[in-house]
Amino acid sequence: MTDFLSRAGRELTAAELHDLLRLRVEVFIVEQECPYPEIDGKDLLPGTRHIWAPGPDGVAGCLRILAEPGGVQRIGRVCTAKSARGTGLGAQLMAAALDAVGDAECVLDAQTYAQGFYARFGFRPEGEEFDEDGIPHITMRRLAPGR
Image (cartoon, rainbow, N blue to C red; front, side, top):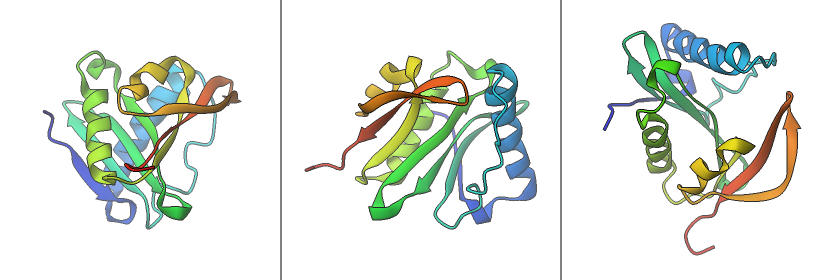
């Protein structure tokens, strides 16, 4: 199991935030050729938590968890560096995220090709597929136990 770092948004150092943003831009904007506003004002909110795996060239993988109304937790910006793909790091990141949120209800907007990956963690699709920045997505939800 990889050793992950985890911090609330406001606890991040400038260097940590830089490295997280650098990986997200590399994956979502450059690789996926999807120009969108990566700096969305949510990374430093009081209810935001970042989880990431350090790698030899910076951040190997990361995600963030946003607090939403009603105690729902939103997992997003899940990504791994090209060099870390196929190693199981993405699954380890998701397991770490679910450990962090505990029994809270969780939601995420998955790129549609990744539905099977998130289903392994108890997420189920809801609603219709939608386009986000030119990429097909679907909302997926994992209910709190007993719901």
